[in-house]
Image 1 (spheres, one colour):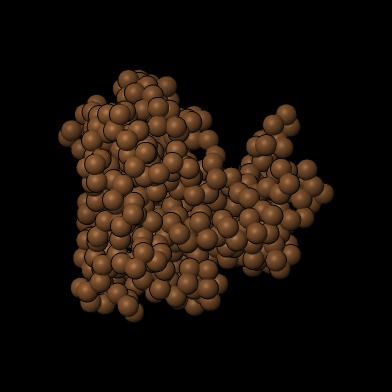
Image 2 (image 1 turned 120 degrees about the vertical axis):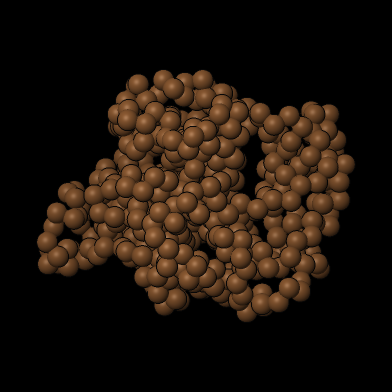
Length: 450
């Protein structure tokens, strides 16, 4: 439908049963926001946008509003413009269509705070250098029943008996996702009580971010139809290992995967190594875009398989950057890096964009990876880690904010308006939630991310 007019696309959707279009974006707090229009208003929404306040650029996760330069009054109107090339008829919600949006101003110029445009801008920057990326998010989630108890409580992590209570749900979820164009790779019970994980096939970065949002709202919808609620928070049950949303990425040039087939460490090509090294180098200062909540740092701890140290390794699940080579037969297509310190509080567009920005900087500077770490970095002494250049990532959102505030790299990549808005929201979230107990934070944040 890419080359067809908004009127034609609207007509096609309507003939397929569409009644209402949910037009959504993700704010700097990681919360999905939405405005909906009847199908007969969709073409007009594409041409003129849907009005929404400027203040959504500085909404906190608790729905209170902070401020940043240019976004410090109730004045101003941005326009949400649905991207009909990404519109999807929703399975399990008859009559509904979902579409991600671009954020424009009233002169129909793209807003500098549009996170989706930031991702697209980084994709285009890579393409200008002959590089393309494939990405996908793994999504971990916790299912709670009508009594707010984890589904399958007390059953073993990864156990087949843990799958039995959700078999019908998983079938309906897989059917719904695939009918929406999302190819499910695998799904399984995870470590914690009520915790499950679902992986989907890689796509281009912008589509991967769109897919992340559609995947999670579909999980919520199908779960509700089966008497469950799904939470993607980094901590859902205090004391239990929390939910991550690791991202896998590969870099390509001339149709070849740059993370295999080379003479570098673990068969990396020279350019592949440069890009991976760029990501690893910038990890501390871009961490607040990857682990964005006060709760994130309860999960981001050593020996949690959360990637709490700045190191890389081949299939090392304690390294922040894990090289997944794949079997020999499929390595040329499958080799990728997994960035593990990401959780479900993220804005997925900011993640894919900053990841590309760091990779391209590494390529430009011909950065080189340190020696791989093949053990748990927490088992090394502090002196041993210092000698290897390994440091623990920020242990709190405040520490991550401090790193962000010093970062000229992140500011330059995002641009001043988006950087200032994001920084203001993170400071505000810390101010609101840091005085709370863990239990209070979990109670307030459990259902805010979807």
